[in-house]
Length: 176
Image (cartoon, rainbow, N blue to C red; front, top):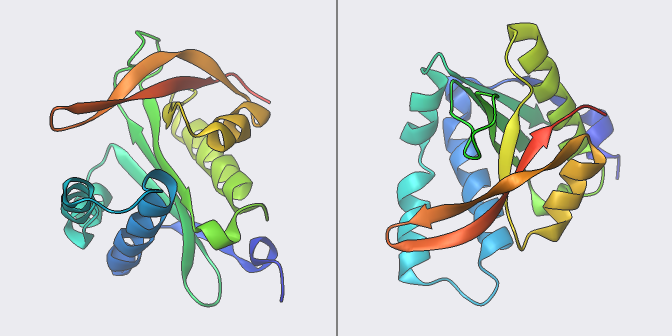
């Protein structure tokens, strides 16, 4: 089977991609964060948050940019960048990598790196700050991935769902 990273193209997301982006997001979020089973609490969050309408709104927001990785079968990953978002640790950057998701079966073959590089280039092209992002503090593989690609720890924050909160590391891009 050919390497998906070599056969995928990275392009701006379009309105026709919204349902694929929602489905991919649900798949990745559940696989990453719910390892013991799916509670109604998390199911309600995921199904309410990752909808085609959610992505349609992002595509129509001038402060948002979404790039997708598409292979011959469909979308296998995406990066979402938000400009004008305050840095949670008080840093100067106002540019966040809001999401970088790759289908789990495509991990380790360069898609994440390709999407990240395209996202960083998009920031430079638009004259945006070097981006920051948050990663779940327990997601050591994601944190290691970002650190290998020019990010460093810049603080901590919490991801909140209703009254619950989960520790996240803040990572700032410093260059490769």
